[in-house]
Length: 292
Image (cartoon, rainbow, N blue to C red; front, side, top):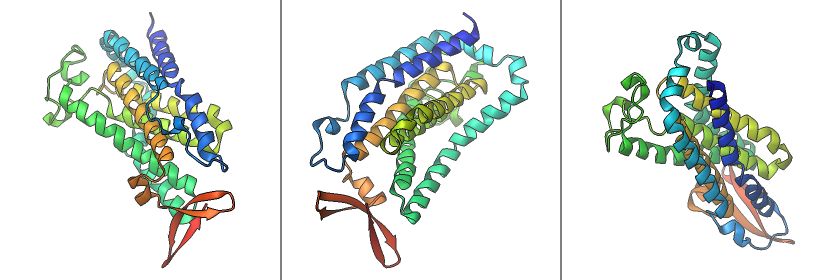
């Protein structure tokens, strides 16, 4: 099978794995934004569902499928002709920089602008995108340290099975290959932004999802291209990031009174003619203004 077909198959598997959550997230967003909803439906209280099991199975299958291809894909993308391609080099570097540190900077900027300007959706997007990166990256960091897989350049792309328990803690990052941190962050942002956008622009999902997940996939490929990661590192990073983004947004909007959001996105409940109205408090001088 040619390299192009192998990469295409990998992207197809990733898309299929991410797809089952779309309908569920859309249904949850509709319930969450319904002004006449007097109580939280049982489906909204569930953090893990059967659809999540299918998503996990899809990503697990993708990761396992990449192991036999690790060495071949590493050698193929490290081919001298591809490495000499300035366009590929520039776009891959740009994609990586956009994620780290770009994603944190953008998220913090959106949050700040939203808080100052009184735009809750903007602040919400900025914070939950950043929170998704933090949560998913924490899981990735632990796995990197425990599994201790050597990066491709350590073994000259010759041994993708070089794992060492606990070896990833230290060693200047040489044994922190599995999973990919950049890919984790990229897919966490993609999942969070896509999930958030369904709440306030459900018709735009067909634009937002391909752009966000396509960009995240580009980041994953760039990590193989630059030689710090194997293909299976990227697959597992995509899984952790996607789960992290989806779960953070789902939990936050199903439990708007959670401690973290009460501090970062301060909310207030007041009576109205249609029942309880949930808004959020924005500091303005010495006073505060309640925003719906």
